[in-house]
Picture 1 (cartoon, rainbow, N blue to C red):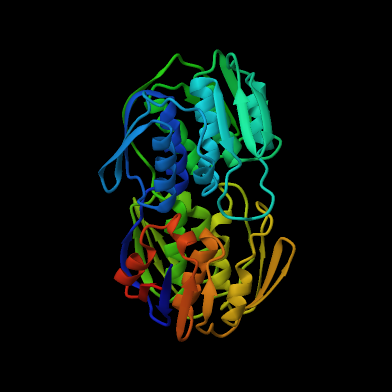
Picture 2 (picture 1 turned 45 degrees about the horizontal axis):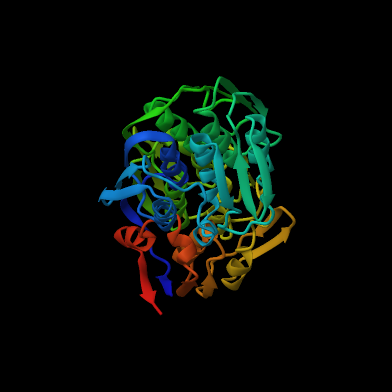
Length: 417
C-alpha cells in the first residue's frame, strides 16, 4: 500500500494541465454500450475508476483498448452479457450507469448495488422510478434487476435533483420507442457532456443543462469520435491549492464558466482570480479571509469541492460555516484535519470552522476521494511533514496528483510501504 508524504510550507508556482473529467468518463464509457459501432473516446483520464469500468465491460464481452494514454477505442457490438460482475461493480459508485445502458440496449440488466465512497445512504430510487416509467420491471434486493419487453418513451419527474438518475434515465431512453421528457433534472457539466456524446453518436437529446431534458428515441446509434470535457473538480482542487499556499498557479485546459462558483469563493477569501479563454490564474493572499459556503447542485458550489475548501478555511481569519446540502456524512475527513490542529466542530450537515494560525504535519488518512484531496491541500499548508495513508481513494479520481503538485514546486512524494 502506498502513501503520500508532504513537507508543507512551500508556495506553489507554475502551470498545471487538467485531465479529462472523471465524472463524465465513467458515464460516457458505459454509454458506449448503446452504440452499434466503434467509439473513439479522447481525453480520458488515466485514473483507477476508468480502469475499473473498462474491466467490467471487458468482462461482459466488450472490446476495449487504449490507443494511447488518454484515448479509448470501445466496441460493444460483441457484448453478450447483461449481468455485471459483482466484485468489480462494488468498487465504484458510477457502475450503476451500466443499468441504464444495458437496459437501453438489451431491455435487460442485472447490476449489484454500487460501491464507491461511503457518504451514508445514497438510494437509487429515482433511477428505478425512471426505468419503471419507461416500462421496465425492476427489483432490488442487493442486485438490481431490470427488464422490459420494450421500452417506451414517457414523462419522468425526478423528486430530487439527482445527477445519477438524470444520466441513467437518459441512457435508458435514447433507444426507447417514442418521446421521453425528464423534468427536475441535474445540470452538471458532465450531464451535458454525456448528452453531447450520445448526440454525436446519433441520439436526439435536447435540453441538457436546463431543468427539462427531451429525448426522441432513435433506432440505433452509430460509432464516432468524441473528446471528454476537462475535470472541473481537479481544476478546483489546484485553484484552492494555489490560494492555500499563497502561490501563483495557471490552471490550464479547463472551461472557466464551469469554475464560477469556486472562483467566486476564492475571490471572497482574498485570492486574485483571472479568467482566460481556457485557463484560470489564481494568486494567493497572505491573509485568508473567512467565508460561508453551502454546497448545491450545479451551478452552485460543488459538493466534491467541500473538503478542499474546508481545508483552506481551517487557516482563515475568523469563523467560517460550511453547510453540506447534497450528501449525508460527508464530514468524515474532519477528524483527520483535527489531527493537524484544525478547530472544526461538526453538527449534522454543518461544520463551524474557527481558523487557526497554521496546521501541523501529522499522520492522517484519506477517508474518501475528495477528502483525500483535502488532506493533500492541508499537508501543503502545514508546518512539517504530513503522511497521508489510504491513498487508493485519491487514485480513483486524480491522475498522479503528487507528480502534478511536485511540478509546481511542492515537496511531495509517493512512498510504497
